[in-house]
Length: 421
Image 1 (cartoon, rainbow, N blue to C red):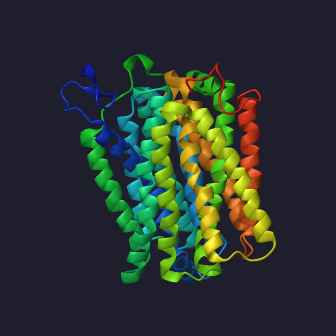
Image 2: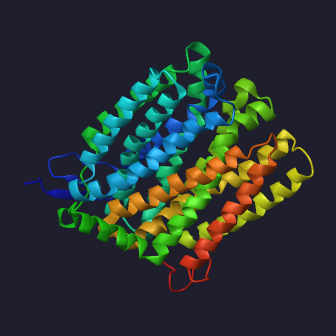
Image 3: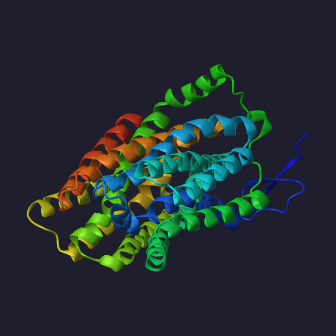
């Protein structure tokens, strides 16, 4: 028999009766840290791309981007596995299984004898990392809803965005004093810290009444709930295309900052500048969303994203962008993620609390695999200019807007009927 479950009123989190309460600050920091292992797995490697190309002489500067794509594919596919498992066995057990797999594959990457072996290790690492995202989103949905869920997700995303600020500095620091393989050792150490913290402090939040069987018919039924809900399905698709622009930027970041603008060791500084604005916008969203709602904020930000991306495409089509103008335009564009990502997630998850793990896995699969593939296409189009990236942004954000219009039956910015959202 499981221990009884109580609720910490300061955080909204459930806890077992024999555990000390997890306050809201620690709750957000813990979930953000678990999710941040995914950003760490991507961003910490970006400064090492030239070193990887040098070691594996059979690949070129565009092919090294597959180090990201392989991880993203594993990460997305793994979510379809861990979603139903977390709805059956709870949030904790799948989390620690995933972390063990993550750590093991990170260490395997250290001794990978070939580029293909490295890609395989990265793919399986992504499968393990999927558990962290599934559990984080499901725990948030287990413990809150509506605008409060959007606010909590925004604060998690704000802390989460600290990793893209710090990770390139960490990666750059490692390759300045050691071989690039040691980046994976550092990843393993950080994941071990998060595993210990989660083991001692993360409560089990799945209500026993909501546990679902792993029988194929029940799993199919759970995914059917998600895919048959118009709002959830089309917001998931909107997220997939929108996140494609983020992955496109990540794939091209090293080539833009180092190759195009010649920043060299200053690459992490420029990268962090954009990440700081993304974190700040997530914090601002957490404050504004309870007043204005997810729909008004995210729809407005998506429209602004399209306008700014179109402006960037027009300007870059007329000649190379000076670095200062590039930084202004792309900092503004990327900062809008803080107003879209968390809100789209909360809108998509809201109707599906009874299958939160499965819903989280479907949304995560769409964002990571769909977004990763779209981002890879944008990254592979890089031709030494900003134009392919800007045009890619225009295309994917426009498709995202179309998906939102379908989800909302042609209405934008919220209505009286959905004023609470």
